[in-house]
Length: 216
View 1 (cartoon, rainbow, N blue to C red):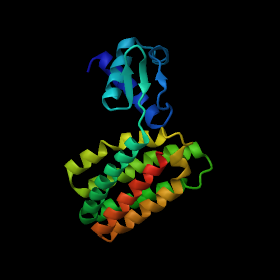
View 2: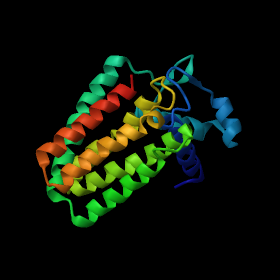
View 3: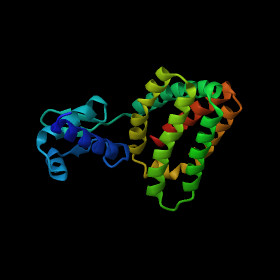
């Protein structure tokens, strides 16, 4: 990879992290000049990073205006989570049939980490840590499914899910809902441990559907 390519990749990663953490809100203009100053680079790697984010539907590059954070309607958000719930439920059902004992222990360990932050008084820290650990939880479920194609399709949607939640306008929604999210995870985990595919599917679909309420 060229030096400019590495710079673009680093800037893309940093900006994407900011977007997924809700540090930029829908409709907000992203200043190329400010980014040049922040990263100490020329315009080209900045634009390369923004174009990549645009292809993933996090930002829009508008003629005569510049780059703005993508806005989604309430209907768009509802449609996304309706589809996402079905896909995640399907993967969880498959996971309940294929999970190894070691994978279940890893899932339990991840959920213990989430439980440890439930009572943390720092809402911002709780929100950030939950988002990180939540990814680990669902990634383990993908691995349990034993299906690369199922996992790869649903994995691609997680960034958009986090983006929609954290740009909903609510104050640190993941931090406020950590306890309830942990409770839902434990229900899914219980169904997987019982090898109950129908229940794992239902509970995971329900879990994702409640995520939609955070994104309103």
